[in-house]
Image (cartoon, rainbow, N blue to C red; front, side, top):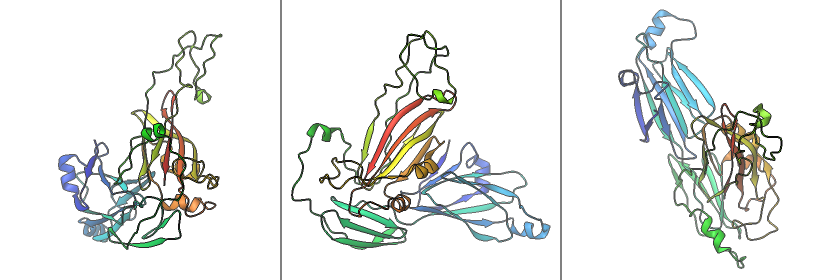
Length: 343
C-alpha cells in the first residue's frame, strides 16, 4: 500500500525506509501537491566518499526510482554529497527505494513548489503560463495579471458582471449538475462494473454485439447477451478551476478514444450560440497522460491544453471533453464513460 507524505516539505531516510518497509515497490512513498504545483527532490548522499575512494565507473550503485506521471527515473550514488536530484513535471511523484545491506545511507529532501492553479470568479476566464497568470472577464475587456511567489499568488482579482441577457435555464438539468466547488478537489468519475463476457459464441439469431471484440475476444454462443453496447454514457461537468480525475477498477486500465478541447457546444457554460465551434483534437495529450494507467489526473486549464488550442478566442469558456473506456486487462471489456471538464 502506498505511503502518502502530506506535509509541504520533509525528509525521507533510507535507513528508516529499510527498517519499516516503507518506500518499497509494494509501499512506495507518494508525494502529492495541488494541481499546478511540482515536487522538488534533493539528496544528501552519505556514500559519496565511498564512491570516490572506489573510483567506480558508471553506473554507480542504484538507489531507487521516481515515478512522475508516465516517466520513470532512476537515481544512483554519486561523488557529490548534496545535490538537486529531480524536479517533477506533474504534481505527484512516487518513490521506490532499493535498500540492500550494501546500499550506502542517504536522505531525500522533498518540497512542494509553485502555486496551485487558480479558481477564477464567475463569468471569468483563466490562463496560466508557468509562474504568471491572467484572469479576465468573459463579457468585458477587464483583465488582472498575477505572479506566483513561492506557493502564493500575488496580485488583485476583481469581479466580473454577468451578461445583460440570458437564455432560460432548464431547472431539471441544473439539478443534475455537480455543485460549484470552492477548492481544487479531485472528482471521482462515474464507473460501472460489468459481468464477464461468456466464453461461447452468440446464438445465430442474436442481434447483440460487444465492443472491444476487435482485440480478439470472441462473444459467447447460446448465453444471454450482456448489454454492454447499451450502456449510457455518463457526462460529468467540472466547474472552472477543478481538475479531471479518472480512476478505473482493479485489473482495468484507461483507454482514451477521443479528446477535444475548446468551445464545442451551446450549453450552460456559454450564453451566446455564436461563440462555439473552435475545438481542437488533443487526444495525443490525453493519451500521453492517461493511456494504459489505472488512474490519472489532468488539471484544466493547463499550459499544454492552452498551447494546443490556438483557434479559440481567449475569453471563451473552454473545456476538455474526453471519451474513454476502463478496459479489463485480459478480457478487454470496456466501460464507456464520457468526462467533461469546463472553464
